[in-house]
Length: 224
Image (tube, rainbow, N blue to C red):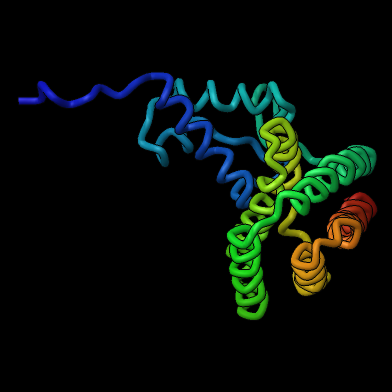
């Protein structure tokens, strides 16, 4: 009876588990400082513990996860120095991607950005924080993919995996509304072919988001 069924490939299963963990990290499903439980993830994904452990080790190897409690791994809490370092590297890499994206712009790209911007504005107004963060990721990565550089995309993806679990703190100071003002400026600048204005708006978006994170971290250290 099952002669024509293609067997599940072990390497594909491991890649699928890794990709799903990355998605959960980008969506803020893991709390910084708390361990990621292998058994819990394996049960949620309906897989054995082995591919989960291997995926977690891959994320440890690129600095996204670290030891947080004994031998357990999870999203590390970030120091002020680490946040500053991430911000500075993101400014260089993501601004370069935007500059190349403007040079490669076409009608399909502009339509995609406009559609994503409309979704960002809808989620901001409805107060749907998870949807805003997911759409914000889609907006930025659609922008960066237009650079045409897989190498840049790999670097940017790792940087986002490191910072995404912390982005839920931005709700505290109405940062989503401020961010959408800058998203509109980015789209307007790209539409007119003004690379410098697009880069400036993106840089301001990143800087203001990090200021909120830095203030939140400083406040938690004072009360901790």
